[in-house]
Length: 255
Image 1 (tube, helix red, strand yellow):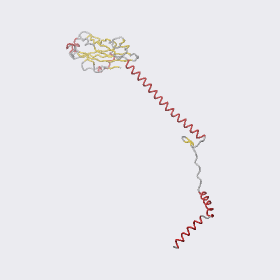
Image 2 (image 1 turned 90 degrees about the horizontal axis):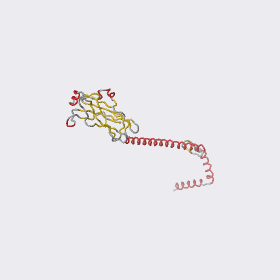
Image 3 (image 1 turned 45 degrees about the vertical axis):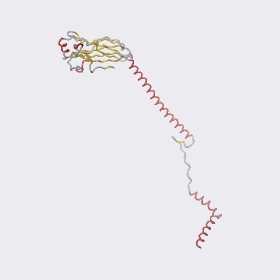
């Protein structure tokens, strides 16, 4: 009991001492001493640079203006690139539209055989054809070149490397209008002998002919139509005799 009373009296004494005027006078001095020991924090330096404007100085304003000008220049460059791309696409569209119109309006020539031709002994072989313009405009300056030979059945034009030099013009330059066929005849230079004629009819020889029609369309572009045909005397012609003209499997093209 006496020990508990002693502790309580000691606590009350401490409180009274702290509340005394002398203790209160000592507290500000302690706080001043504590503050003196703590170093004040220096103020943060405000910086200026690209994308950083932490103050209102003229330097920061200049950096801000420079960055704005750079951004505007970048957007301007992108605008020029996009505009250039749009212009290129427009020009390509106009060019493609023009080419489509030209393809629709230009002349197109094809060659079609007429009948069975004339293959008789002691006469010049003659194979008639029509040049037909199935385009929309005339073909001008048309010139036909042709070559006719008699060779074995397994022969090909590639077997004679210089056969291109054998082509010769057999018609003057003409104009072929749409749906107005022009007649041409592919002929040999010399008459057929009876032996050659007999070989053709028996299938031991074949008449090979090829040609090319060079012309210009209404846009003054050079064009051509190439063709190759064969005459097989062993084929059944009119009334079962006389042979028949075939369009060859290769050598027929145009531009």
